[in-house]
Each structure stands twice: as C-alpha cells, then as structure tokens.
Image 1 (cartoon, rainbow, N blue to C red):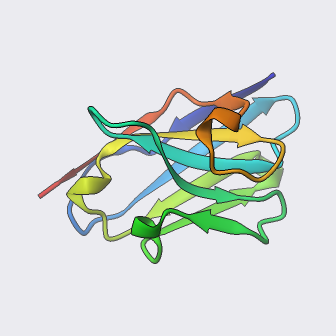
Image 2 (cartoon, rainbow, N blue to C red):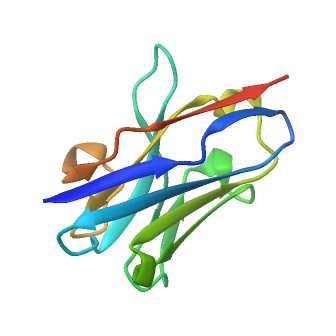
Image 3 (cartoon, rainbow, N blue to C red):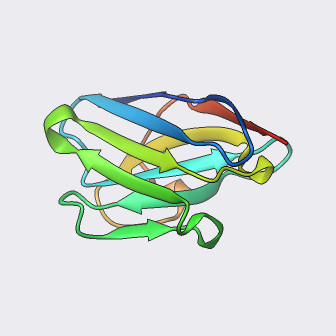
Length: 121
C-alpha cells in the first residue's frame, strides 16, 4: 500500500504562483505519478503526469506553459509548480500513482486526500 500526502495549496491572487508537493510512503514510489483536480460541481480531471525517470510528461492543454510537473525519487516526492494562476484553476488538487502511463483517473491505484487551491480575481 502507498500513502500519498499533498501540501502547498492555499489562496493566491490571479497571476500568482503555488508549488504543490506530494510525498509518498509505504511501498515503492509508483512508476507513473499524476495530478488531478476537481472544482465544485465538476468532475475530477487530469492535470499533469510524469513517468519514473522524468523523461516523459503529459499536461492538460489549458495548463501547458503555466504548470510544470517534476519528481524527486530520492525524496519520494512529486511536485506541481503552478504559475500564472487563473480563477478557473481553483479546485482541490490530488496526486495519484499507477504502474503504467495513463491519464484516466479510474486506472490509478493510489490517491492522496487533496489540497485546496483557490485563485482570486
């Protein structure tokens, strides 16, 4: 079993930045790690993902050029650097882990509890 704990969320003005962290404990750090988000009244959606050796990344179109996913395997941690934040980025952000590359949330094995990101105008 892998436990994931996110941190770094908060309230920020539009145009600002936040860096989210997700620390894994328990069994081996998952091969493929991702960030998802869920806004009030909306379905959870894919944001970004990264493979084990950080050679492959995927991003939701609307965050390309603004968000950067990275990982430090020595620290069992995956990060999401979010710049130029917009009010529409407001959501609960959760990290997740899975063995093989996928952007489908139902295929992920492990989930964190989420961290709230609120972007004000």
